[in-house]
Structure formats: structure tokens, C-alpha cells
Image 1 (cartoon, rainbow, N blue to C red):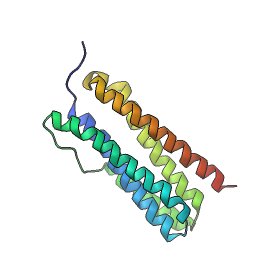
Image 2: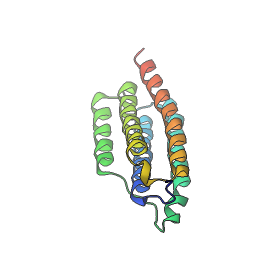
Image 3: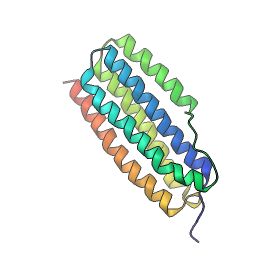
Image 4: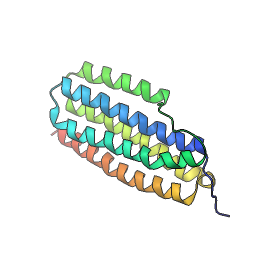
Length: 155
């Protein structure tokens, strides 16, 4: 039997991880700017925009269920951003440290999406699952780009 309703709590969890990603990259932009790593800012801005687009894609599905999308973030994301700021400030203007932190954020994002797609298939419509799969594929490209930038930073 094909599901024709979505669990809004699951979609809101996905929106929260996107809100975390937005806030994480805003923090990364601030740190890059403060440490003279301006070449990283365009990529970071692109990923802020990407997550904003992901949220826009998911918002109609929340509204279909009579719910508003959250503008909140997860506590773990707040703690991670605080740690990211401390780590980069302690290590100095270390490009590699900043990119390692961004990659950890991308790993958390990827894990959340994969978990939802694997464990909650009966609580999401095929349309939402397709949207999440497309978003995950775009995010995997972002992850690979951050990883490449990190690897090149140590050369």
C-alpha cells in the first residue's frame, strides 16, 4: 500500500538539519572572513543557499499536513557551531581545521538524510522520498567538494 500522507515531524527534522547547515556555514563564513580565508566564502555561501532551497522544496509538504516548517535548529548543531568556533580560533587561521569542521557538519547532514530514507519509508510519500534523495545527492557533491578543499589545504 502506497502512503499518501507525510509525517510532519520527520520533515521538520530534515528542515532542522538544513537550518543547522545554514547556521554552520554562516559561522564558517564569519570564521573564514576573520582569518583571511576569503576564498572559501563563495562555497560556504553556495551551501547556505542550497539548504535554503532544500527547505523551500519541503515547505509545501509541511503545509499539506497543516503544519508550519520549523525555523529551529538541533541542540547538537548549536553545540557543534560553538566547538567549531573554538577549534578554529585556537588553531589560528587554519584553513584545514575550518574545512574539517565543515566536513563533520556535512557528515551529520548526510547521516540524518540516510537514516530518514532508510528507516521512515512508510511515513513519507514517494514524492517526498524523491525530493530527499535528490537533495542528498546534491549534498554528497557538496561534501565531496569540502573534502577536496580540505585535502588540498594540507598540501
